[in-house]
Image 1 (cartoon, rainbow, N blue to C red):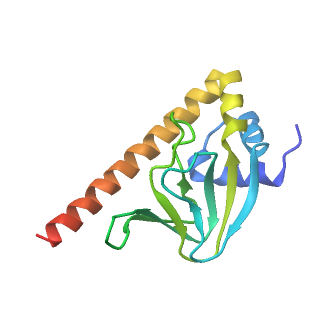
Image 2 (cartoon, one colour):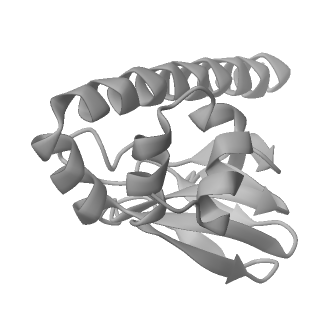
Length: 155
């Protein structure tokens, strides 16, 4: 199996660390390079979770829309972060807005392609589920802390 440039990027990325080389190759087969301009949304709350992203360069604000108020930024992600866990958890619907704060380059992973590979190889599916479950826990904690900050500062 010949290594591709995306395989090398994935091998060096902290989220994919120590993942078997054959799995990195499978993941690379579902990935493509994307670019977002400042202010452009990667996705909006309620969108179908058709992709997740590994940020190569740039900054992305993860936000919650609040009716009648400015959106609350839960977390700002940058180089080396992974964005989007809902592709692996039914009903595969985005739970936040994600907006590029600056020019952002990322790898976009096709969810249908990856879900198919996970169905075909449960070991890959379990490995990705473990990694995305950890990411989900981090996002819930960041949301909790941000909401505590918003409500304690407005009291």
